[in-house]
Length: 158
Image (cartoon, helix red, strand yellow):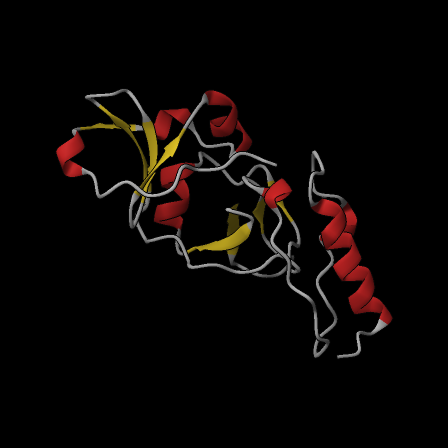
């Protein structure tokens, strides 16, 4: 497979994201239409939200891949406003979309905070909660019995 110089630059920019404290502007550029782009997993991007200019779709990076936030209901269950959106992220692999209506929950029995969707995913500490810029006022207090099965822990930035 041959890569154009633009694709190669996009790939190298994406690779430089791994371990970066923030996503550099070079990683935000969308690829030119019709070009093959190598997709990457970006653990250093966990918690970032991306939206390309002129597009409505918003993506949240969890487990190093982008997950589409399906609607405003879901978005505002997790965040208070649109602040913190970054443009781009097109070189990051796409995973399954968040479930519509996903929300933040504090389990009454343990005090643990979870991102709840298909499963409940534990957010281990306040630092990770802050990396994802989740709005703490959106956290619902719920009983363990009302939550789905436990999934993987929400990762911080690597």
